[in-house]
Length: 401
Picture 1 (tube, one colour):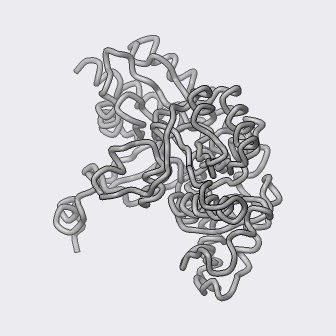
Picture 2 (spheres, one colour):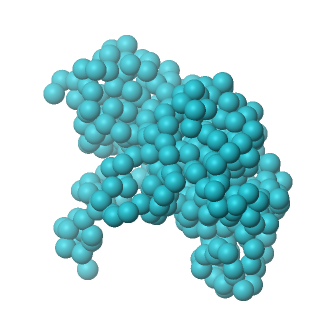
Picture 3 (spheres, one colour):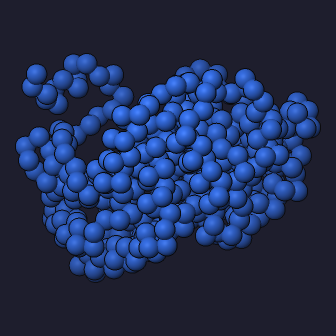
């Protein structure tokens, strides 16, 4: 069977509009398509491929576990799940772990747990969930409603209730909204889809303090920021603030679907037997790959390397901008970076993405005005240099029309 892009139009639901490029092979931070064209990967599958493509540690874990046991059910547990959970607990504030398959599922679990905690401890009146405008928390009906982008949640009928939004980094507005009826606050420690927006220290500390004051569960959505992406194992460490629940996915499996919700024993006890579950969550194959990814990333060498690579990217963007003056700023932390377009190029982020692909570079956008970069955490330095060369060509192409 000859596989072409046309097949997509014939058989796939039209909610995506993939490019004409069909990648068939990846190695490290390079990818090749059906025609043998090579790309440097600054996208990382949207912050998923934290160790690039086909990293030997992940390939070995997959092969080894693939010949042992893949899936049971949660009627039984398995060794990889227990090892991974122990490592997550040992490396973070958490005492208990729940496994799922995706960031949305981990967030769904966190929100259900927060509601259950409030109901058990304080009664039905305490049900408000506060989140932030432009936030993104997943595509289930609950998580997409908590996410602060109406474009993703409108048009599907009545939404889950008692969910309110305020602007990110607006502590006064948040303080005016939170009360003893608030059961949970869900926040990204660095907004991803919303445009790569870092929080101020004052804002994050204020959110933490107000959650404590009002007995509201603070949920950190670290789906995109977690597992080394910001140069800390989890972004909360760099902020010096500890959440009550943390969700992690994307990079956790290095490309294999897995997610986890991390929390304390005191909060976790409210998910009693039968209150929540997942058929595939915690299956042995996913957990074995994730354990290898986690072990590889959670080293001083890799985490320090993220900060070193951030500087190379920032220097590269600065050099490009000195020539073409297309960015007003570069936002973000570690290898979650967003180049913000100037007013002259407002709304044209996708043009830069398309031009990048034409020049052999995979990139992303975060809204219409921000070009987003989430490469492998271990991307070779020469690949950064070559990728920036290709990006400069793409910028020149857009500027010259």
